[in-house]
Length: 175
Image (cartoon, rainbow, N blue to C red; front, side, top):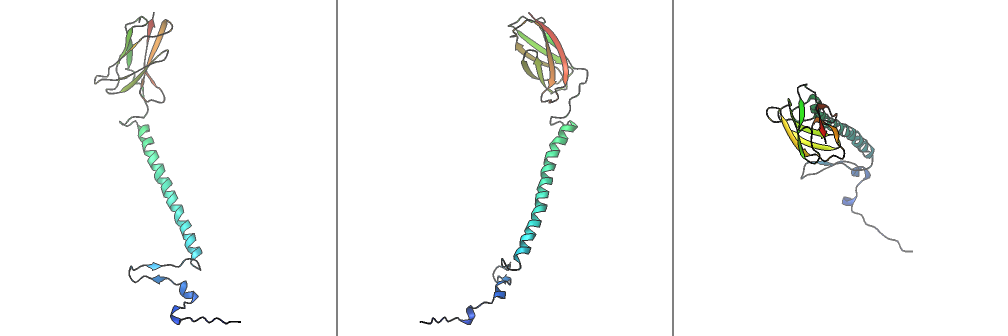
């Protein structure tokens, strides 16, 4: 049987407690913490506690970002959205009346807010778009292509109003 001899220099030997001690970096000026040992669980617990406030902060910031546009829409700011109220002065009419089927007709109106974007929905599916001029009047035209003659109705809404508040209504005859 052979015996193996192992020579160890005393400068290479480190004790276990030396491995768990923080090491000071002489060149960069920071400490390196050892992993594992008695420091490991406490560090891991600290990380879990630091994540919860970050998630809470992100949720709070997200809620604030979503609530600002919603508040602007509720207050009726100049950026659009908001509630639409019928002022009572909006009127519309169709020319010519009666309209021969297959010919051009126009829907006009007055009493709207200057610059107001308008949707005009005519019975049987015709949609017209217009914008009120500086004096509050609008004009939109289309060709009458109805399957049946009779009385039709046009309704004027503010463009983008999800509640579809009717601002003005006018009737006309198609023959």
